[in-house]
Length: 396
Image 1 (cartoon, rainbow, N blue to C red):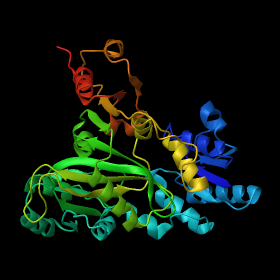
Image 2 (image 1 turned 90 degrees about the horizontal axis):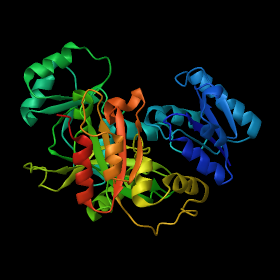
Image 3 (image 1 turned 60 degrees about the horizontal axis):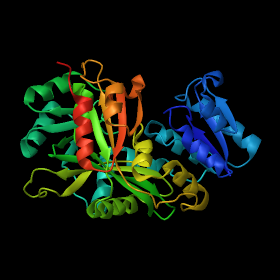
């Protein structure tokens, strides 16, 4: 089997997908814009061959790289980046080279925030009312129907980038005065905690592995207000999250993919919409959760999701993974350089020896995930709360 992996060097943990595929005797061919002599040893060792392009944004260059691998190694069986930014380009390459997997029409359905709402509805999940942002006057009329606040966000975009909460008429005017040249949608604001249903599904859209993440702060607020980031991987997947998430995967007809589905769990009842605790739609991301979340899932669930993914690609089911290990809460906290903290890493490590990772984020993801991060796992939720209290404590 020949597998082309786009951008194996970034994010920094994604070489693991290549490594596990190669361990399954897959020929893994990397295409990226990092010079070969700047690749980390782990990346080089995870690949059979690497093709360097000047820019992954240049479709012609990437096309020629795929053509080269196709000529040298024969038919390409899979092509993937597992990166939201490249999903549409991945799909176009699959179409142009007749490679199985999601094609452009499929990917548009799960990268367009307006189109994905129809699939949520198909799965029986309620969605926020919305419209495409047009003129100030028309947007204001919509707000009169749904009330303030509302959220405006790009119809196609990555994460919470360029997403804003509009709380008054002056905010809406400022948004329109900026004159964005991309399509935005404007939707009613939902009061709830963000939760996710993550995992890997087989070729019949059945989850073969799944987990649940809880995001107390809004990623939109973290990005816009430069807040600290925190979330955790749950020990178990609640039954209602599993049932709703599985229906959404089926509705999108997603096959042999890592997925990250986001929902709101309502914290305030809304007439005609839902009661406290109900699950309603946010958005889908048909790729792994961002940053080091796949590693957090591994720490918390005592599994290797990179291996599960490789097994699904090769055998359509987990073969080389043992699921019979203890489960933990795995917590992420992203500190901000602008804040002076009371405790340093050594102080925290003495009190909480189960820190799994501690490092700095790349500038590209620091806006959403914090400048310096800690990842730790716990058997008891009370311990997680104590850790959060210590790692977030301010210097006097």
